[in-house]
Length: 119
Length: 222
Image 1 (cartoon, one colour):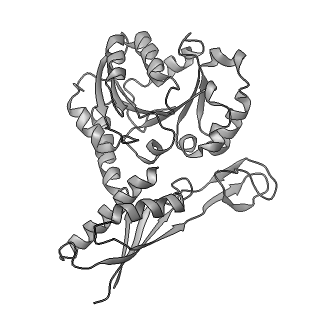
Image 2 (cartoon, rainbow over the protein chains, first blue to last red):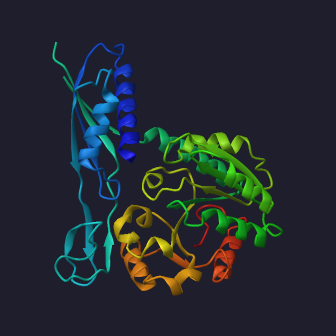
Image 3 (cartoon, rainbow over the protein chains, first blue to last red):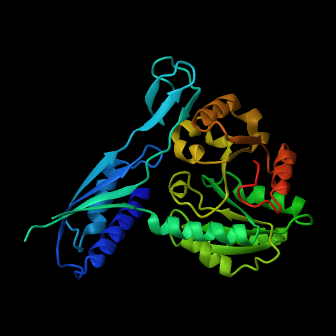
């Protein structure tokens, strides 16, 4: 359940942003947050939503919608040169089934965007 | 109102890990982060490693556990300094806990610090502690499908120790499958097959470990 830890870190990152803006915490409610993750750095959507909802209770993020983007990881097959979306749980080239390939850099866990309630 | 943030969610941990890494480099210490399921034999591997090498290299251990100081006591009994971190239920160690533990160690004469992470094959993989080398331990009793089931731990490791090979006659553990699965995820992974109980196969691990003395990060050849 590393999603619980991620949820706490998302909230901390949001609070750091709202503080930077000069407004006191609680001034503007957050209605939506967008995060992105890679494939190795992946999260389980259901667990992530549950953890975020629980962690956000009683804060300016209570009830905020969490959007999770999964950034694919590129694999390059050394056998046939095919470029494909690497699946960590099924690591082979979908074209030639070989498993000699290089993989690109995995996307980090990012807080991309926050949306505040309109006045 | 929308604002673009684009901040790393684990930025605080990453910053702290980077500070730890700089500390290790400055002190010429090799830091190893050991990750595995509970009961895979991390502490026993460390006990054997310490007994074999403590006269040649200065080792210290940072022990992570949810509760109890049992592992740190075992490490001290083996003859080196140990700091216990009790996470009180948290399932992984984070970089700031390592920074705090480093203050409790006399690091001046140290060659190698080993962090024994919480027994958990999932969460600790997400938390960079500032280590230069990550070791994942898989014991044969856990089954040969673990690389496929928990790919993250194996994809991000530098070394895989397949432990408890003395149990092989009693199990249907396919070492070839584990090697194949692990190398698919991580072609640079170095694999040792060992038994920490009998020390079978540990010679190469000891040699590798001993080579870590005085090797600064970046010059360290796995």
